[in-house]
Length: 381
Image 1 (cartoon, rainbow, N blue to C red):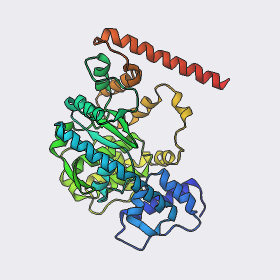
Image 2 (cartoon, rainbow, N blue to C red; image 1 turned 45 degrees about the vertical axis):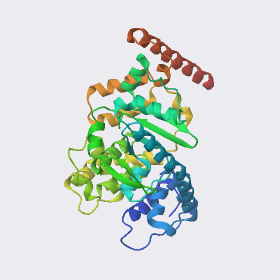
Image 3 (cartoon, one colour; image 1 turned 90 degrees about the vertical axis):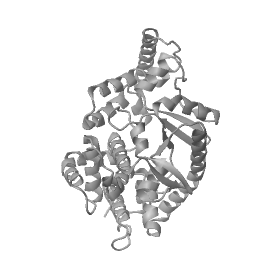
Image 4 (spheres, one colour; image 1 turned 180 degrees about the horizontal axis):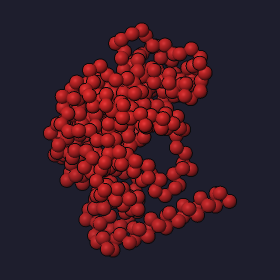
């Protein structure tokens, strides 16, 4: 066996399958002919370092285990910041759900370190957004990008309508504050429903509220589809959740098209879990058409900054998952509106009237697009 990207990816998938069924069979060993370095790099690129180490342990190359140790150490500060923010929100009367990251690791894997180190993702009710924003600012967190300031301006109202999250930073911790769990309205339950079905997970000895099991599966599946199944980490999360009987016991609605495709991809790449409901088996059959694309995407290098100059590229990339999700036509309009009037273009707009603010925002956006096109053209000369 050689060390082609396809072969190394197949070995990573095999290790992940073994990790998901670590109670069965003989210990995992690296396939002959695959270099430890190539394997470690692929594991990091697929973001499954911690999932593998927490399940396979010492059978993995030393470089993989060292990376997991570094991720675990880095997560200590994040856990402390999480508990502080939850205390501040509780004192301010702001309900919050923690999702993805350590909360998902604890729920899906039974180990808060099993997904590595990342941002904090917090979901609040839309009416609580301004209060949550104030709490974070008072505690020293600052927005890491340019966003409109909460208040009566049309720019802030438009931002809240067209977007679903904003990022705050303090020290080494980033907080993604969400007021909708997904960009598409109606593609996922709103906060009140999620709060009523919440579960608590243990993070560093403290109970933390997160999504219910079925909601966690649906969200993880949608998020993986949005990324075009680029990383095995999200696919493995879905596999763990769909293997848990508690997930299906909590099912209260059909899964959407994009979510079913993710279940099928997880079943095809990592195996159909024992005792799976019919929906998983059907999804495994229905996803065949996207599997070739999944491997292509997983083998692609990280996006270069040169690709980001194309205006609207990000919006176009979100359209396919929206189509699979069969969302309302209004959601396509919302995404186009977000592209035409991104947060940075709304940030300085103070007028409370759309008829005054919107033309200025669109003119600013058009000027920026023109500048980027001219700049790109000069680079090509």
